[in-house]
Length: 266
Image (tube, rainbow, N blue to C red; front, side):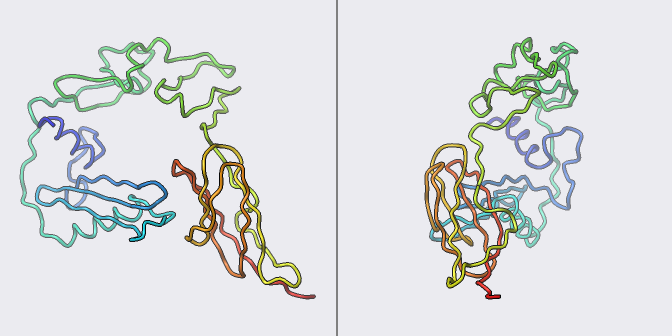
């Protein structure tokens, strides 16, 4: 990686990559990136300062999922707390490499304002350039002519070709739904269930509608079942407050919090 590229990447991770924004918005400069592995099994946060390189991992030793815990809300706060315990970095000047410059660009094309027709300059922004190069946001945006498309509700911006496999074809008035979307059925949020007479547990049948691929079912953070898309699972629920989570192979999930009470004879 060149000196200029390293400078831009680090500046993006420190302050969002907006030229003119102060490098030091907090008491210390920290360039960090978070990450979460499939099924919430690993939550990461890695960061660097002028003096230290830090890494935080949060997960379970046996590799089971930890729903709701991801890099941004679990590992990143620990990373900042760890940095606060370390000595301050030396006050080193931050020089902009000669290969790096600033220029006005147009969103969403990403090209320099001087190279973009006013019709396609939806927003004007300031960006870092490397070797005076302003690359397009996505390769198919090199030719902006098909950027605007006619629709039943008027003219609108089209999706980039690289995203077409994740997006359904437009529906009337732009009612677009992400491809592969699915829903958890059989249990409503905050629902209260009661056991039948003579039974201590509630037997619940739940399923997911839509999408493709396998599903993993977790009850109170514990894996209890696996199914394919559209197949139902039968769960035996004891009295108490519970949280049911279902995950798919892409890491998407839905959850329901509910309560179960034993049968109370009248």
